[in-house]
Image (tube, rainbow, N blue to C red):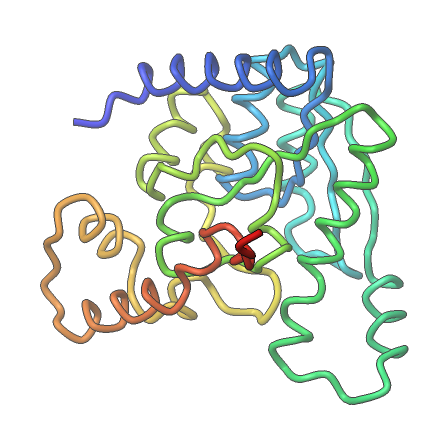
Length: 241
Protein backbone atom coordinates (compact mmCIF):
# COMPACT_ATOMS: atom_id res chain seq x y z
CA UNK A 1 0.00 0.00 0.00
CA UNK A 2 3.06 2.28 -0.16
CA UNK A 3 2.17 5.39 -2.14
CA UNK A 4 5.55 6.38 -3.54
CA UNK A 5 4.30 9.47 -5.36
CA UNK A 6 2.65 10.87 -2.23
CA UNK A 7 5.74 10.15 -0.14
CA UNK A 8 7.85 11.84 -2.80
CA UNK A 9 5.72 15.00 -2.62
CA UNK A 10 5.68 14.98 1.18
CA UNK A 11 9.44 14.42 1.49
CA UNK A 12 10.24 17.17 -1.02
CA UNK A 13 8.05 19.55 1.00
CA UNK A 14 9.79 18.43 4.21
CA UNK A 15 13.24 19.10 2.75
CA UNK A 16 12.17 22.58 1.62
CA UNK A 17 10.83 23.34 5.08
CA UNK A 18 14.03 22.09 6.72
CA UNK A 19 16.15 24.43 4.62
CA UNK A 20 13.80 27.35 5.15
CA UNK A 21 14.16 26.89 8.90
CA UNK A 22 17.80 25.73 9.06
CA UNK A 23 19.65 27.67 6.40
CA UNK A 24 17.69 29.55 3.73
CA UNK A 25 19.76 29.58 0.56
CA UNK A 26 22.08 26.83 1.79
CA UNK A 27 23.12 23.91 -0.38
CA UNK A 28 22.45 20.21 0.20
CA UNK A 29 25.69 18.21 0.42
CA UNK A 30 25.23 14.54 -0.45
CA UNK A 31 27.82 11.79 -0.34
CA UNK A 32 27.32 9.81 -3.55
CA UNK A 33 28.15 6.11 -3.41
CA UNK A 34 26.27 4.99 -6.51
CA UNK A 35 23.69 3.03 -4.52
CA UNK A 36 19.96 3.55 -4.17
CA UNK A 37 20.02 5.51 -0.91
CA UNK A 38 22.37 8.31 -1.93
CA UNK A 39 20.73 8.38 -5.37
CA UNK A 40 17.25 8.84 -3.92
CA UNK A 41 18.37 11.45 -1.38
CA UNK A 42 20.22 13.45 -4.05
CA UNK A 43 17.21 13.29 -6.38
CA UNK A 44 14.83 14.42 -3.62
CA UNK A 45 17.11 17.33 -2.76
CA UNK A 46 17.40 18.34 -6.41
CA UNK A 47 13.61 18.38 -6.73
CA UNK A 48 13.17 20.26 -3.47
CA UNK A 49 15.90 22.88 -3.87
CA UNK A 50 16.82 22.85 -7.54
CA UNK A 51 19.84 21.07 -8.94
CA UNK A 52 22.02 24.18 -8.54
CA UNK A 53 21.73 23.86 -4.76
CA UNK A 54 22.81 20.22 -4.56
CA UNK A 55 26.47 19.20 -4.43
CA UNK A 56 27.40 15.55 -4.73
CA UNK A 57 30.64 14.29 -3.23
CA UNK A 58 32.19 11.09 -4.58
CA UNK A 59 34.68 9.61 -2.12
CA UNK A 60 36.51 6.52 -3.35
CA UNK A 61 39.17 5.02 -1.12
CA UNK A 62 41.79 4.09 -3.66
CA UNK A 63 40.12 2.25 -6.54
CA UNK A 64 36.33 1.95 -6.30
CA UNK A 65 35.09 -0.71 -8.69
CA UNK A 66 31.61 0.82 -9.05
CA UNK A 67 32.58 4.51 -9.17
CA UNK A 68 30.91 4.68 -12.60
CA UNK A 69 27.55 4.30 -10.85
CA UNK A 70 28.20 7.39 -8.75
CA UNK A 71 29.27 9.32 -11.84
CA UNK A 72 26.12 8.14 -13.62
CA UNK A 73 23.97 9.56 -10.83
CA UNK A 74 25.50 13.06 -10.79
CA UNK A 75 25.34 13.14 -14.59
CA UNK A 76 21.71 12.00 -14.60
CA UNK A 77 20.70 14.68 -12.08
CA UNK A 78 22.95 17.37 -13.56
CA UNK A 79 24.30 18.40 -10.17
CA UNK A 80 27.68 19.87 -9.24
CA UNK A 81 30.05 17.36 -7.75
CA UNK A 82 33.52 16.83 -6.35
CA UNK A 83 35.54 13.62 -6.38
CA UNK A 84 37.79 13.29 -3.33
CA UNK A 85 39.91 10.16 -2.94
CA UNK A 86 40.25 9.53 0.79
CA UNK A 87 42.92 6.81 0.57
CA UNK A 88 45.79 9.06 1.70
CA UNK A 89 43.77 10.34 4.67
CA UNK A 90 42.84 6.81 5.75
CA UNK A 91 46.41 5.56 5.35
CA UNK A 92 47.85 8.61 7.09
CA UNK A 93 45.70 8.22 10.18
CA UNK A 94 46.11 4.43 10.26
CA UNK A 95 49.89 4.74 10.07
CA UNK A 96 49.95 7.48 12.72
CA UNK A 97 48.22 5.33 15.33
CA UNK A 98 50.71 4.05 17.94
CA UNK A 99 49.08 0.61 17.87
CA UNK A 100 47.74 -1.90 15.37
CA UNK A 101 44.09 -0.91 14.78
CA UNK A 102 41.48 -3.63 15.12
CA UNK A 103 39.71 -5.04 12.08
CA UNK A 104 36.53 -3.16 13.05
CA UNK A 105 38.50 0.07 13.37
CA UNK A 106 39.84 -0.37 9.85
CA UNK A 107 36.31 -0.99 8.54
CA UNK A 108 34.78 2.05 10.23
CA UNK A 109 37.57 4.56 9.63
CA UNK A 110 36.76 5.26 5.94
CA UNK A 111 33.09 6.21 6.55
CA UNK A 112 34.16 8.52 9.39
CA UNK A 113 36.71 10.21 7.15
CA UNK A 114 34.05 10.48 4.44
CA UNK A 115 31.79 12.31 6.88
CA UNK A 116 34.63 14.68 7.78
CA UNK A 117 35.05 15.27 4.05
CA UNK A 118 31.34 16.06 3.62
CA UNK A 119 31.48 18.61 6.42
CA UNK A 120 34.60 20.16 4.88
CA UNK A 121 32.66 20.63 1.65
CA UNK A 122 29.60 21.89 3.55
CA UNK A 123 31.48 24.52 5.54
CA UNK A 124 33.19 25.79 2.40
CA UNK A 125 30.01 25.86 0.31
CA UNK A 126 27.32 27.10 2.70
CA UNK A 127 25.90 23.61 3.01
CA UNK A 128 23.91 21.18 5.12
CA UNK A 129 24.96 17.51 5.05
CA UNK A 130 22.37 14.91 4.07
CA UNK A 131 22.20 11.64 5.96
CA UNK A 132 21.45 8.85 3.47
CA UNK A 133 20.60 5.97 5.83
CA UNK A 134 17.29 4.12 5.61
CA UNK A 135 15.07 2.60 8.30
CA UNK A 136 16.11 -0.99 7.57
CA UNK A 137 19.81 -0.24 8.06
CA UNK A 138 19.19 1.90 11.14
CA UNK A 139 16.94 -0.77 12.67
CA UNK A 140 19.83 -3.22 12.97
CA UNK A 141 22.61 -0.68 13.43
CA UNK A 142 24.05 -1.16 9.95
CA UNK A 143 25.68 2.27 9.88
CA UNK A 144 28.88 3.70 11.29
CA UNK A 145 28.31 6.08 14.19
CA UNK A 146 29.67 9.53 13.28
CA UNK A 147 30.28 8.12 9.81
CA UNK A 148 27.42 7.45 7.40
CA UNK A 149 25.12 7.56 10.42
CA UNK A 150 25.72 11.31 10.84
CA UNK A 151 24.30 14.32 9.01
CA UNK A 152 22.11 17.39 9.42
CA UNK A 153 18.87 16.07 7.91
CA UNK A 154 17.67 12.60 6.95
CA UNK A 155 15.04 12.18 4.21
CA UNK A 156 14.89 8.36 4.28
CA UNK A 157 15.37 7.48 7.96
CA UNK A 158 11.77 6.26 8.23
CA UNK A 159 11.66 4.38 4.92
CA UNK A 160 12.55 0.70 4.47
CA UNK A 161 14.79 -0.58 1.69
CA UNK A 162 11.76 -1.64 -0.37
CA UNK A 163 10.18 1.78 0.10
CA UNK A 164 13.37 3.60 -0.87
CA UNK A 165 13.49 1.52 -4.06
CA UNK A 166 9.85 2.40 -4.82
CA UNK A 167 10.70 6.05 -4.28
CA UNK A 168 13.66 5.73 -6.64
CA UNK A 169 11.36 4.43 -9.36
CA UNK A 170 8.88 7.25 -8.71
CA UNK A 171 11.78 9.69 -9.13
CA UNK A 172 12.62 8.08 -12.51
CA UNK A 173 16.13 7.17 -11.46
CA UNK A 174 18.03 4.70 -13.68
CA UNK A 175 17.06 1.15 -12.76
CA UNK A 176 20.73 0.16 -12.48
CA UNK A 177 21.02 2.50 -9.49
CA UNK A 178 17.72 1.59 -7.82
CA UNK A 179 18.25 -2.17 -8.10
CA UNK A 180 22.01 -2.24 -7.51
CA UNK A 181 22.96 -4.95 -4.99
CA UNK A 182 23.94 -3.09 -1.81
CA UNK A 183 27.59 -3.61 -0.87
CA UNK A 184 29.15 -1.74 2.03
CA UNK A 185 32.38 -1.14 0.08
CA UNK A 186 34.39 -1.87 3.21
CA UNK A 187 34.83 -5.60 3.62
CA UNK A 188 33.93 -6.92 0.16
CA UNK A 189 30.61 -8.53 1.14
CA UNK A 190 27.04 -7.61 0.29
CA UNK A 191 24.88 -6.09 3.01
CA UNK A 192 22.78 -9.22 3.24
CA UNK A 193 25.84 -11.46 3.56
CA UNK A 194 27.02 -9.32 6.46
CA UNK A 195 23.63 -9.18 8.13
CA UNK A 196 22.75 -12.85 7.81
CA UNK A 197 19.22 -12.22 6.51
CA UNK A 198 17.60 -10.49 3.55
CA UNK A 199 16.29 -6.94 3.45
CA UNK A 200 12.96 -8.39 2.27
CA UNK A 201 12.71 -10.35 5.54
CA UNK A 202 13.75 -7.36 7.58
CA UNK A 203 11.38 -4.94 5.84
CA UNK A 204 8.43 -7.30 6.32
CA UNK A 205 9.30 -7.78 10.00
CA UNK A 206 9.61 -4.03 10.59
CA UNK A 207 6.29 -3.19 8.94
CA UNK A 208 4.16 -6.19 9.95
CA UNK A 209 5.94 -7.93 12.84
CA UNK A 210 5.85 -11.14 10.78
CA UNK A 211 8.88 -13.33 10.07
CA UNK A 212 9.17 -17.02 9.21
CA UNK A 213 12.67 -17.84 10.40
CA UNK A 214 12.97 -17.90 14.21
CA UNK A 215 16.77 -17.64 14.12
CA UNK A 216 16.59 -14.57 11.90
CA UNK A 217 14.01 -13.02 14.23
CA UNK A 218 16.33 -13.56 17.19
CA UNK A 219 19.26 -12.01 15.32
CA UNK A 220 17.27 -8.98 14.16
CA UNK A 221 15.91 -8.38 17.68
CA UNK A 222 19.39 -8.69 19.18
CA UNK A 223 20.97 -6.31 16.66
CA UNK A 224 18.14 -3.81 17.13
CA UNK A 225 18.56 -3.79 20.91
CA UNK A 226 22.37 -3.63 20.77
CA UNK A 227 22.42 -0.73 18.34
CA UNK A 228 19.62 1.51 19.61
CA UNK A 229 22.25 3.79 21.14
CA UNK A 230 23.24 4.87 17.62
CA UNK A 231 19.83 6.47 17.11
CA UNK A 232 19.49 8.14 20.49
CA UNK A 233 20.92 11.47 21.68
CA UNK A 234 24.22 11.26 23.51
CA UNK A 235 23.60 10.61 27.23
CA UNK A 236 24.48 13.71 29.21
CA UNK A 237 24.81 14.19 32.93
CA UNK A 238 22.30 16.72 34.28
CA UNK A 239 23.50 18.09 37.63
CA UNK A 240 21.04 19.36 40.20
CA UNK A 241 22.03 23.00 40.60
